[in-house]
Length: 105
Image (cartoon, rainbow, N blue to C red):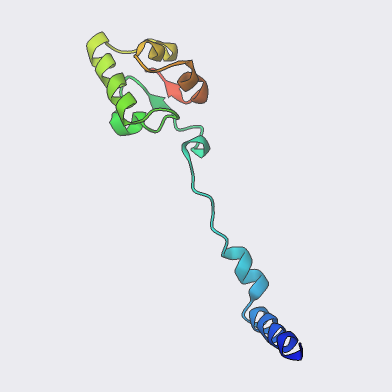
């Protein structure tokens, strides 16, 4: 029992001397940034955005970005953000998730 206590005391002392409290607080990993945490002022102009830029929008993957570009090339530029719903597969949910991030210029 004494050996266990002695060993525990040595481990805690070594940790403390190595800067334990400060070291452990800085060592915590930061959560990865997701699309939901992207800066809100990063507006995406859906009339000029390329494949990669369109994928910055929440709920828009590679396939959806291709569909948006194909629709835009076939029908001309979007007049308002809600016109994005005309693209097959894009629903109101995508517009709601990206409210304020979609620009039409």
